[in-house]
Image 1 (cartoon, rainbow, N blue to C red):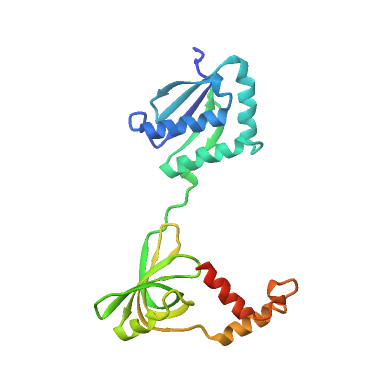
Image 2: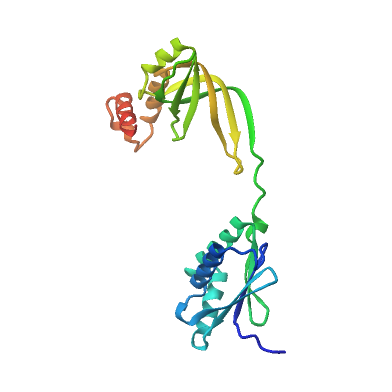
Length: 247
């Protein structure tokens, strides 16, 4: 049997040679070069059919070095381990999987890729009565239902509609003010990662946070040893100051 003129071959399953884009070819080639190392002595040999097969040639002086590097990477030892993860994540993102074989046909490193990737959650939307907390950052409109945008404490912005001009006028006084509690009919969407977010809301009422709840909260925090609030004379005033600076 004729000895192959390459030392390693990456089999990529899920894409054929003829369908592999130039961008994906370049990205995989770069990641392979990073994984094998000794870049001046490792060369591209050919791209073969049978899924997409990258054949790589390694010059004799560095073959032992490359072999050791791949073994360490496979065993999560050294910087090469991250490069295995990068290739696997790239293949998973494309919906592919693969394995790196040596010239004897033995699998050196397996890349499960999309095989281990969980199926995405179906996008789902529900509507229900809800309460959300946030800061008014934009409000205005000519109709009876007034558009408004709020920023929630954890960062995301939510576009809502305020029912009634009188209520919208009152909310205008809270523009860029403290967080408010909004109640109404909300639309919640679950994305493919399974995360829920409020995508829309018809605000029917709102209220300011109960100051007594803050008093109780900071009283409890001041009892905790080595807590920064223990030495603050007026924790609520300090909290409001920090809250304004954050915004």
